[in-house]
Figure 1 (tube, rainbow, N blue to C red):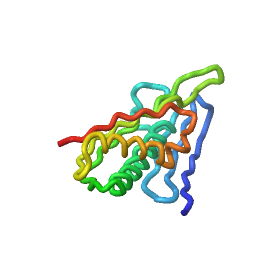
Figure 2 (cartoon, helix red, strand yellow):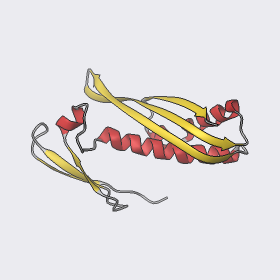
Figure 3 (cartoon, helix red, strand yellow):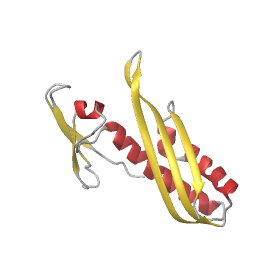
Figure 4 (tube, rainbow, N blue to C red):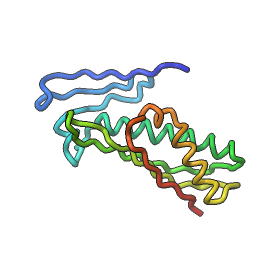
Amino acid sequence: MPSRTARTAWTGSLMEGSGQVEMTSSHVGTYDVSFPKRAAEDADGTTSPEELIAAAHSSCYAMSLAAGIAKAGGTPHALDVTAVVTVGRDESGLRISTSALTVRAEVDGLDADEFVKVAEEAKAGCPVSKALTGLEITLDAALES
């Protein structure tokens, strides 16, 4: 499998400085980052490491789930996956503590119980979930009609 690269250019101190993270491999964009905005409720047009992890987790999980549904004999028509990554403090400072996955799906060929089983297996098998070992990862999975 290929490697992927992102690059951050930072100027200044933690509290007064800022940076830009560039999606180097894909060339999809360059995004502003700032610690004060990272710690604020309103990101005000900037991204953060937590948002980037949430993006990685939701997209990886969607791919893992699509594969699992097909393997179980179902057909995925639509998957709407959200990941909410939470940062807090512990005795060592800031720490990412949880990633909460929510998925709503339109799937043929699986009943609700089968879908939840496949969804849990996809959570455990997703490479980003594996990389986030040590975090509490929760899942709210349901079929939509």
